[in-house]
Length: 102
Image 1 (cartoon, rainbow, N blue to C red):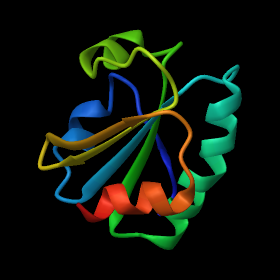
Image 2 (image 1 turned 90 degrees about the horizontal axis):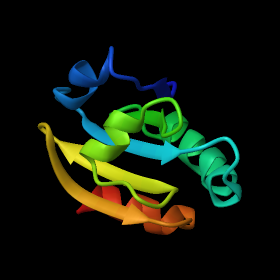
Image 3 (image 1 turned 60 degrees about the horizontal axis):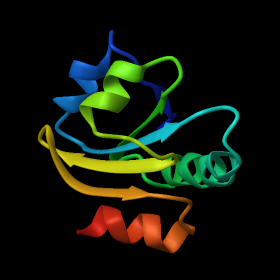
């Protein structure tokens, strides 16, 4: 499934999805974010049962604030609108996949 660019307009539909949701909070200027981004893209391609979204914190500061994002990259896993995992900093693919299994 392709990665969705999440903003204030489509956030509610993403949050209320029946699927497990992985959100990647990033910024274009962030080096660690650029390391995590292709991993998140791979996870989206390999796991169509997971809804994967990216939120640019520069464009969506309200969403970043709502999740308490103070450092990027921040990855958030949601199930039925509730946060079940949240992690800050660049992570290798196995650690990101482990977040999705909790």
